[in-house]
Image 1: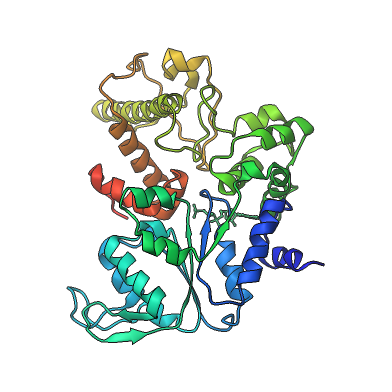
Image 2 (image 1 turned 30 degrees about the vertical axis):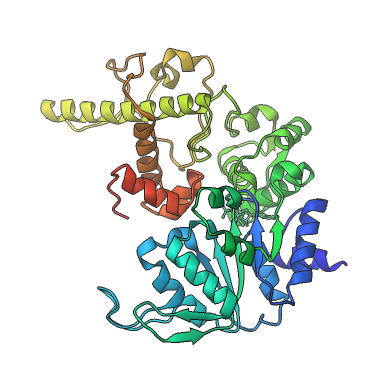
Length: 407
Ligand SMILES: Nc1ncnc2c1ncn2[C@@H]1O[C@H](COP(=O)(O)OP(=O)(O)OP(=O)(O)O)[C@@H](O)[C@H]1O
């Protein structure tokens, strides 16, 4: 057995494509050194495996491995989280605290979504990479640490540099060894293997037979443009396994779970992406309108029931399609809900065919974010993943769009 096969088995990494093998090979070669590694690749390609492999195959393997999602930490506290702080250095700093660079002394730090680091933190990071020195927030004492850094990003750092959002010197310092993880589109041969693995995982978890694909469905899966990469494929495999009664999946069934690629059927819930093509925005608008109308109709119904002195009792919709604007009806395929119980909408005569003209993209985004947060009980990480955006971007949008977030 080759070393790469062993690594794949140990970490549960599925795939045989030469590009994936090449990336793993670089990780193994560089692991025993102390070189800084920058892992790049689109969102959902499996970048998180690489720092783990590098740590496990390095001399640091018995010391700490700390993974930090830079996008998830608010800008105001990130310096303190990474480099620690002294007592009283800011409101709420009731005690001195070690940062991750101090905690991980002798080990490895994985800085995920490194492009999201604010400028002052980028400067501190550059210093610790160059000299091993850092200063706790509120202190003037220079401290030393011996940490190996592996960073990852799904952003185009060249673009971020050109826009002045990322320091060029830090980019070169971080990317001493670059590793590019291929997108799923670059390794279609791995798609059926991954699907089988995710379907098998669900089957074991819920003690049911695993779903399989017929030939046409397998081809459809391989030819699909996996914008969300393996994360999206996993999501689809899990939805199908959980929702479909039949265990052999045909291309007709599969099609319901694949968001349209340039018009056509509405997107399956939970697999949407913001800022996409016009047609996707239109579908998004329909979906938001559809949800909003259902909410309004529910409210109207409850109010009228209350006024009549009765108990509100929403009736199931007999013809969901009829609630959609006429332009969307021809392409309507019953959407697959990512939540276990699809919502039941009240039927109402108040529903009109015309979408309101004044709804802006910001309104749509606000609605989508609110709904994603609600669906995920306020958990930003899950909501952000569902919306295909980083937690930091979600955080920013929550502020920008004036969304009240009680999470
Ligand atoms: N080769 C693979 N074999 C099995 N599972 C995989 C593979 N690659 C990725 N996954 C799974 O896909 C999901 C997404 O992977 P991961 O979180 O590493 O993506 P990422 O590249 O770090 O994305 P992001 O940039 O959005 O953080 C995880 O659940 C991971 O376990």
